[in-house]
Length: 518
Image 1 (cartoon, one colour):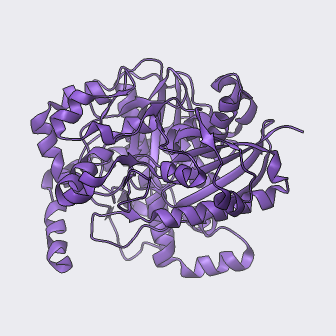
Image 2 (cartoon, helix red, strand yellow; image 1 turned 90 degrees about the vertical axis):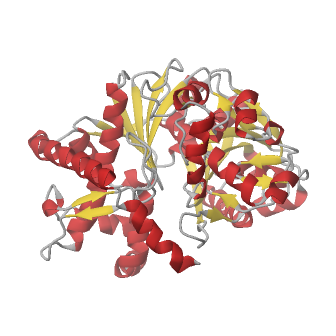
Image 3 (tube, one colour; image 1 turned 45 degrees about the vertical axis):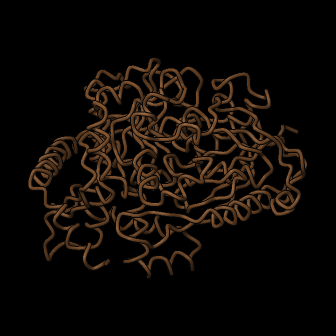
């Protein structure tokens, strides 16, 4: 029997777990949602206890579905959302909720950071633009707005570390890929930049130790947790990395010339690079990959899957009920509905910047926009426009990378939304290139499993792990007759975004909301 690995992904919308053998067979999986707390506009928080309960449930479901003996699990690998963190005391007890990556409370610090350090100089150290997504701006907000809590904190941890502490690991480190998105790491040297931290007034000693992905950081040693997880004591615990870098690994994006569209709550558009050269325009992040001695360029559509999730929750109660009755995914029904709308969504255009935009134009104040709505439009047109708008923004990011000198020969697609064959074909048609769907929508979990296998010595290196656990399921080719239409729509998309940005209508709209919250 092949050794078994468990992978856990602590994502934005919840926790997923997977039991996979070292021959690549996915034996069982489990999922449990975690909500973002309803707080002030621009704030996004999650409860650590909610993640803990979700992890327990997802792991139990994966084990039950796999029909295997828990004692045969050789190791656990963990991936998690990046930029999201909470403050912890010396015992690892959380002092705050998780501040989620999409939280915008730190936007007011962007100008201050730019005054303290030249943006190109900041990028040259961190590989990041100065933007609200990184942990840095949120950390500065906590320092200034809850100073007593900040002073008492001993660690700034991602969600994975709080789970590891409860599993029995003392003061767990983080991996380089995760550290890249703190906004304080030298991405070439893979160390915290003390000079940068001092310049910005951050206590570097609160930052966790940095280690490579695939590092064994401890064992499952807490008895209560072991009982809850239904796993034996002593199982090695292995750091995977940020969810998107793990998804890149699990998709096989480990060599220059390969790119990935990872469709999740947000979408990461990624390209592997052999050197930490970065974007000459200092817009697209260049960060450490979970693959050793590799980096990756990564632009983001800040809202993608979450848009359809909100549409489902607010406007698709009937589809949810029908899907439950038929045993189907409600997103599949929405995808089918969208397919009945013609290419171009009957002249409806959607700009999906519900959480602002960072690349190729950095403007965190932007919001989502639906343009061209007429009485004749149907709900199918709206759903298709949403899906097309996300594809258009992904194309914009990928083209910016290519214009910056990045060579792209192969483009993979993964993530929960890649289950939609219709949406995959939309990507091929709008990006006007072949799109290869990875053989699993659980690429982040596969990447975490590869890291676990490397930690145990089951795989010699990432290439060995990818060759064993990752494969392409199918490739979608663009419909050439749609190229003129989508090229025109793409140009309209960019022109519309630029016009809205220049008009600066978003900030006044935000100001209207503020008095209502006070």
